[in-house]
Amino acid sequence: MLKSIRPFQLHPCTPSSRLSIRCEAAKPNWAGQSKKDVVLVADIGGTNCRFELWQTPEGGGQRLLEKTYRTKTYTTFQDALDALAAEPAFIRNPPSSAAFACAGPVLDNKCIMTNLSWTIDGHYLSKLYGIKFAVLNDFQANGYGIPALESHDLITLNDMPARPQAPKVVLGPGTGLGEAQLMWDESLGTYKVWPGEGSHGDFGPRGWKQRALAGYVESQIGYCETEHVACGSGLERIYEFLLTDPTFRQSTTKRHAKDAPAITKAALDESDHLAVEAVDLMMAIVGQEAARMGLACLAIGGVYICGGIFPRLKTRMQKGTVLEAFLHSNSRFYHLLRTFPLHVVTNSSLGLLGARQYASFLLTNPAFGKDLQVQNNATSPQQTSQSLAELSKEAEPSVAL
Image (tube, rainbow, N blue to C red; front, side, top):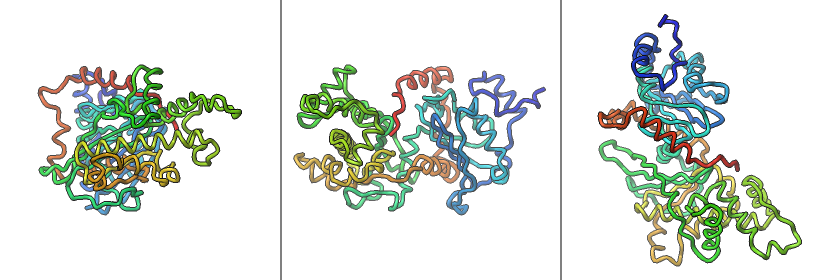
């Protein structure tokens, strides 16, 4: 019987003919019951799926529900969504739009999770539930959160005024090195985020030690891109590189390769000066990359470094390594770089904040959802899934810090 089919158990790869039958016969009536000032957001990683239900600022701006589910508990994303929809607060406040920040590549409003056997298809979900669903890459969501940050969410390293509507850039070292540009869109009346893969470009070393580091990485994996030396696994590579110095090999103190958490801890308590040097070198490289991104689009609206690494290394960061690398006093563009505000984001929920901004825009700005529509000449679902699967294979393993 069609009526006995539970819609949340439907796999997003179900053929379209069967999909349409199930959608018509058994889809939940969110569109008919939803509240116009309520949005659903989620931060979906390989381990946890964190949902939040919010009123829009026009509706009061209050959080109505927060639930975190272990992803391994649920076979599909729809199963987790099913559990959330059964919550009393959700039943009382069904959303009118939703935006999800996903840890994986996104193409055509669809994400195949990198470290999880979930597929999150915004078009499928929109058809099923009758509201707009936006699937964002987690770093794209970070970008949409930047304009909503308050002063207490930031550590300011270069205190300069941001010019309104000017370009902004954001980068974040973590498992990898995410990057995005924020450009003011006059037709939308707000910033639009353009994520990129600039961190996979060739690493441009400064000075003999960084050149030696680039050579070491090339000898290990064949080439050296910026991300290879500016993220969690990059910190480990830098430490391993420093261990190759004959000075340390001849030392009476025996040192061995460490993982990123151990390096971070040793740098903070200064129990291992090699760890201190590794952390400072990585932070300098991130500062250099921040300057490169700023120069690429004249980011006088602000340069933002997000992610969990830098706030954790606050004591090392405040010694000036990042700012010194960012300003690059020997550069002929030093005076221009001085005009770029530089901030470190301390808000650990930046992705959720950005998803909330995006979901709210879907309600208040009809033009904002146009990029979620499937065009007639867009790639087919099969091509999209194949492309996403290839992108997912390229992701590096997670590195804890």
